[in-house]
Figure 1 (cartoon, one colour):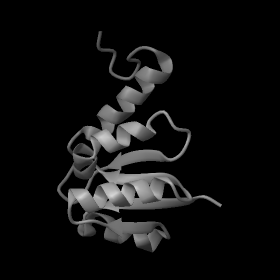
Figure 2: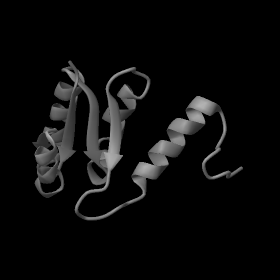
Figure 3: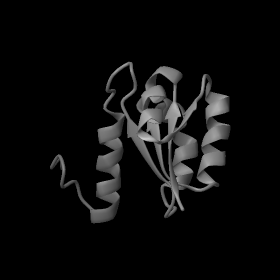
Figure 4: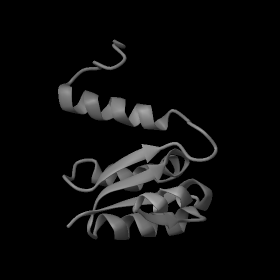
Length: 106
């Protein structure tokens, strides 16, 4: 059975444990990259990642965009919404549909 993980700074991921999700707090970019790779190669179908961490690991995350699993989904952290999550959704929709149907920018 597949699992769901949450990856990010401790304060941002702590509350997700109460929902039954596996939380993985990381304190630096190197540890985060290693943990992301381990999670992606494991039993995780969905990996939520804080937007701040997503910005730092964009190269690593790009590798998984063409894979069926895992789905790596950015979420706002305790520092707030940076807009990276919406940009990621926009990019995925453009790739799937072939045009910008969300923001209608030409």
